[in-house]
Image (cartoon, rainbow, N blue to C red; front, side, top):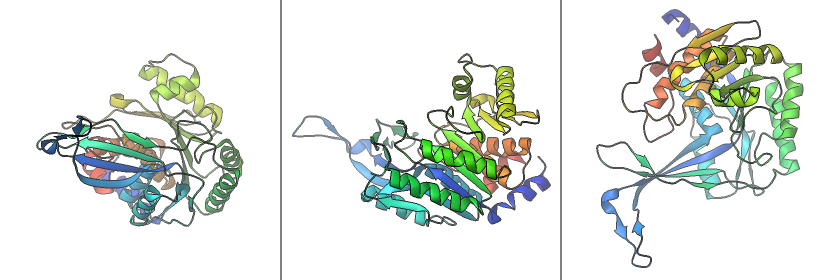
Length: 338
C-alpha cells in the first residue's frame, strides 16, 4: 500500500459510525512491587503489595479501545455491565473515550460486571510478569428482557452504522450479549443489508453464527471446518476460500507469526506475512486490534488486501506493548506499514 492510498482510507475514519455488539469487560491491573513482599502473620503466606491499580475496558472494550485509537468518529457499544463497583469503573472508562456514545449500553442489576483482574509483578528493568488471573463472570443465562433490549439497540443502530462488530467473549453459551436470539436478529439484518459490513469474532468459535464476515485464528478455522488441527498456509487459504464462497462473505484468518489471510467470495485470496518483531512481545490484544482494523478499513472502502495489510500492521504495533492490552493509532500503523 502506498502512502496516498493509506491516507485516503484512514482519513475516512473520523466520519465512520461503528457499533460494537458484545461482551464488554473491565480489565483491572494490580501492579505489585516485589521489593515490598511480606509474610502474613495470620497465614504465613507471602503478601503481594499492590502499589498501583489501573483499569481499562477489555474484551469487546479492547476492540473499542482500538477504534478510539484509530480516531473513528462515533463508536456505539451495545452491551451491559452490572450495578457494582466494577460496572462503575467500566462505564467511567468508556465515558472517558473520545467518540464513544453510551446511549445503547445498559447497566443492570440482573448481571454482574464481567471482570478480568490481572496481578502484575513489576520488577524495575524487566518486563511485567502476570500472576494467576482473578475473573468475575456471569454463570446464568442472560434474562430474556435484557436480550430483547440489546436486539432492539442493535437494529436501531444498524439503520445508520457503517459497520457492526460482534464480539462473543464468554465461555458459557447464552450468558453474555451474543445469544442465539441475537444471532437470529443478525441473520435477518445481514439479509436486509447485504452491503453493511458485519464482522464476527467469538472465543468459542463461529459455528453457530449466521453468514457474516468471519474473523478467526487458524485453530478456530480448523475446528469450524473439521480439518486437521495444524493447517499449513496452502490449506488455510483453501479452507478460508471455501468458507467465503459458501457464506458469500469475506473470511479473515490470523495465523500468528505467519501473518493474516483474507478470502473473498469472488475467489480473491490474500496473504500478508507478519512483520518482523522488534524486541520482546506480548500477544494479548493482537486479535482484537485485527478485528477493529478490519472493520474500520472495510467501512472506509478498503479492498481485501488493503484491509489485511492495515490489520497486520496494527497487530505488529500492539504485540510490542508489554504489560497492557495495547492499541495502534493511525500514525503508529503508518510508521510500520508505509
